[in-house]
Image (tube, rainbow, N blue to C red):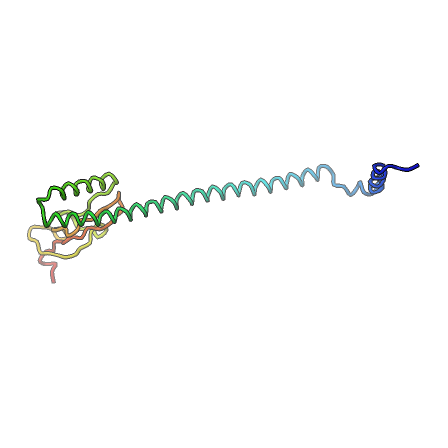
Length: 179
C-alpha cells in the first residue's frame, strides 16, 4: 500500500520528537523558569521604552528652547537695525527741527518700538551705570553730582531688562576727580 505525502510528513515529524518520559523532557525549562525569563525580558524592554520616551521628551524640550533662542536673537537683530533707522531720523530732525513729516515718522517709529517692549535708556540727570551706559566723555559740571549723566550723545535701548544698545553719554566729573 502506498502512503500519501501528508502521512509521510507526519511520520518524519514523529521520528524527530522524543519519546515521552525520556531525557528530553527533563531538559525543557520548567514553566516557572520560562515565565521568569519572559518577565525579566519584558522588564528590560519596558525600561528601554521608558528611556526612549524620556530621550524624546528631552529632545523636544531642547529643540523648543533652541527655537525660542533663535527667534529672540532674530528679533533683537531686527530691532537693532530699526534703531539705526531711528538714529538717522533723529539726526535729520536736528538739522531741520521744524519738519513735521520727520517728526511724525519719529513718533511712529518710537510707538512701534514701545509696542515691541523696547525702552529708551539714558537721560540727563541719571546716575551713570556701566551696564546700561557707555561714557564717551566727561565734563566738569558745578552743582551736579559726580558720575551723573549731563548729556546723551546717542540714546540707548533695552528690550525688557536686556540692553540692545547702551546709551552713549557724557558724564559729570567733579574738579577733585580730574587729574
